[in-house]
Image 1: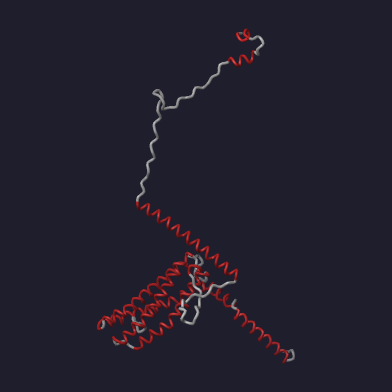
Image 2: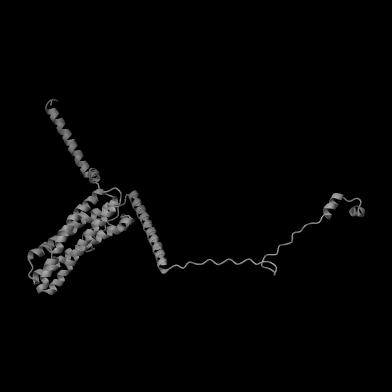
Length: 316
């Protein structure tokens, strides 16, 4: 009633609202301030697990391996893009093998680029086969020199030197055409026929390389080298070069056979003679010269049949 006595015209409801006490919440004093508040114990720091040097080295190797894998994939994509661009433009890259000097008035016969034409996961294997081929050519070349010194100074036969020259002239191009080039095209085109040709030719060539390594009347080899060491140790040292080269070439041929075979078996398709026959038939029939010859033969047969019918009066 004190409000009404002071102002009789005032609103009693507003007056009562204004006169009601307001509960203002006092800010709660955070813990840790003052002596009365209980302090919260500090959280223990997380313990860092020490990494050993071996674990750190393993992680670095894993990162390096992934980086190399990404680089190989990027190179593979770039190579395929360049090949597709060349195929769409109808351009063929210039031949670059064998790398002949400019003095020789001849041009290379093949285009070969492992980084461009071979998928990234097969490049190491194709390079291995290529290095084995180069080692074998080195063995054939050094075999000529070893046979020459053996003939001149150690009483070797002339036939051995003559065979070494024939082998150098014959096997250098034949090895490239008959087992390296097929494995190159097999990995490039995933060709079963080229795989079959590679396995067949290199298997027999490996056996012949074993004969050359032993020196059984076809090359210098271990037999003739050991014999030369008895009286002419210097000539024996020279003959060791082709002997070691044939040994390394033989080991490389065996390794190439096993490695290419493991890749081919791991492809999932397996070795198929029927697939090789089909590829050979498709390759032969797609050749323009074969098609022209077949067309000419069919026309000649049809013309001969018509002439026979005309000459016989329409009766057979």
